Amino acid sequence: MTDPISTVDPAEIAKFEAMAAEWWDPDGKFKPLHMLNPCRLDYITRQIAVEFDRDLSDAAPFAGLRILDIGCGGGLLSEPMARLGATVVGADAAERNIPVARLHAQQSGLEIDYRHCTAESLAAAGEQFDVVLNMEVVEHVASPPDYMAACAALLKPGGLMVASTLNRNPKSYVMGIIGAEYVMRWLPKGTHDWKKFLTPDELFDLIRNAGLDPVDRKGFVFNPLGWSWSISDKDLSVNYVTASRKPG
Image 1 (tube, one colour):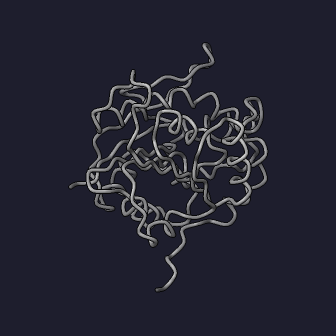
Image 2 (cartoon, one colour; image 1 turned 90 degrees about the vertical axis):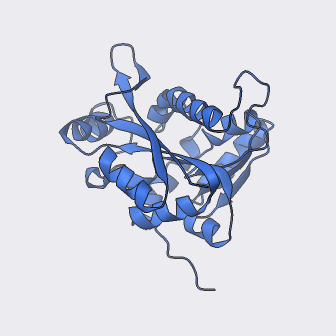
Image 3 (cartoon, one colour; image 1 turned 60 degrees about the vertical axis):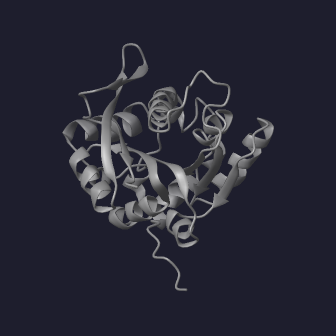
């Protein structure tokens, strides 16, 4: 068997390797994700609950579901999914992220299967999941079409993918690059490449071309006055999230 084509961009991986130790510092380089995480989790859990007819008030509503957190970083999404009862695989192409994630999960008393690997290698191995969490990754890969095809292959028929990224427009440049990296200094300069951002229509085209059916999209909107994030039905101008289903 030939090795699968890799969509990993080594320069992008190096950025996150350098920040690996700071994943669980709410005031460190990943402060924006810590601030956004409750909003992301609200969207993700609601989408999974609707798709698989689960009651979020249950003790372990996601029991029996196998979830892949691709680009898991330090485990900011993997751990909540495990607490909700799911069997979780956290995968990241940045090798230094994995021991950080494993140690924090151990300290938290959680069993999570963390792996230093890519979506392509998992797909080539025939891995299958009920849910793929594909959050803030597509703007960092070398080939978005190949990467999305690998994510789609990882879904079981009837499975759900939740994918988020940043829109590409003047506002997202001001907010996502200048604001986050230069003014607020939430992220190191150069973390994002604005040219790699995707409009919602472009992301939907990638999803459809990978064989999935888009079913929802929402915006994540930051309120600088309340210093908080919220979900918007209409404002997808900077950060946004999508849900799509694999037919079957």
